[in-house]
Length: 85
Figure 1 (cartoon, rainbow, N blue to C red):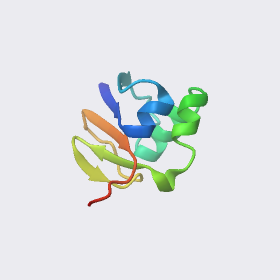
Figure 2 (cartoon, rainbow, N blue to C red):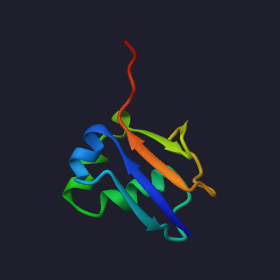
Figure 3 (cartoon, rainbow, N blue to C red):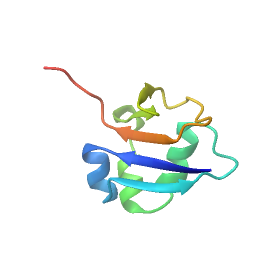
């Protein structure tokens, strides 16, 4: 199944795109698995995913920890921590 991956803020800036569609390999179960796969794609991805403490994720617009199972989610998003003000 093809998934939409959305990147926000400096994650998007490092990677150079705001969104892409990919088919996840069979061995990618969690957001953390996906991060490892994406980080291996090139230097921009590697920089964006270098410090997981500065990264948040969402599945179908619901914030989840990076160890969350992707399951049947159609949209996966990565972004920096959100602050209020």
